[in-house]
Length: 167
Image (cartoon, rainbow, N blue to C red; front, side, top):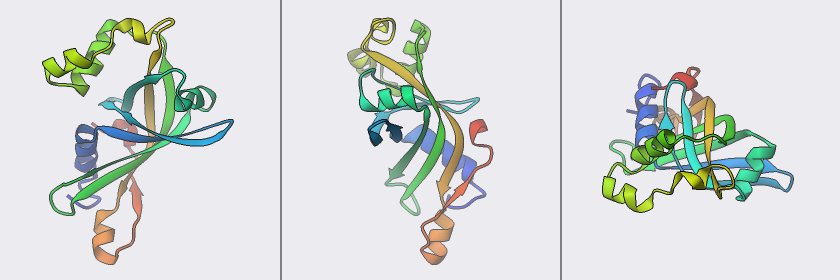
């Protein structure tokens, strides 16, 4: 899978297979990049992770919720790598339910034994809890143009106009 024709399949593979997102935020003290462990929710496309409320990127999101991000995977068949870049609006969730917390951990850690060893209690994410879940609503999505790279070694991206509807 290398071209525009399979862009939706490539995007799905990235959303299902990539575990980390490099998040670019900006704040009063300038830009900041951080890596977060995310899960993808679809219909519309949203990326979810949790972070400390006091982390620099969390403070930046509170001040400036429009963010950019990138994800990539290596070791893939064919070309060997694939990646996406995106822009969206990010918000902290203040009213997290137990059902939401449980679903996040089920998606992030399918193995029940591992999940049980890492899952934090709901109180960590609500009220005075130290952490918050963050939801990035994807508004624009670009893929690495692998076909172009193979043809002329130009490192470019192409946008998928239906990014919020990726399944």
